[in-house]
Length: 221
Image (cartoon, one colour):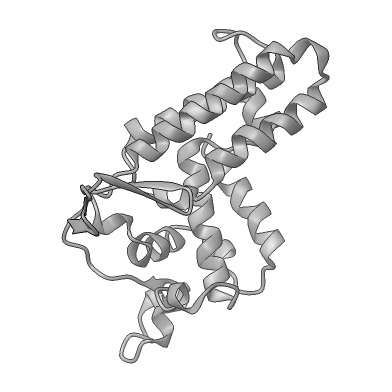
């Protein structure tokens, strides 16, 4: 494209709100950028680890590393394991610095889950998506997202189905499993429907829902 005598070439990716989006809708480059920034911060913290106590290190790791991993994490719903595994390596390295252990020391996974209360990267993505669906159902989310979370009981002709009694949400069929299944219109309701009935209870508060949801996800370990 030529604009004002200058020739502008198209780019294969674009940065939107801090997220690197590629033309093929994959988030591999975004994950690579996040991983590189996180490992840079971890190397800096590793140099001063001896001068800090465990609580201070945990605070710094959460501020400079975990918050980066969590940012817009729900976009990774349905991403392949090779993508989320990069973020899992970041979390493992962060846990090693907090626990002051080496790479192959035993008990890192137990420390990360029982002491730091960190979910695995894949479960953290699912956690974020379910939280967003909860917000949509309780009028705490933008309308353009809430329209994708429609209970089956509110749909004419389907209110007598068993899925309506279970508090399930309606979701569309997708043609492309690699991309269509990653849209919020499908991933949000389908992940919500997979939760147990007590988590889909509308009487739960947001804080209570977060607590019970994390406990439920930890039960798979």
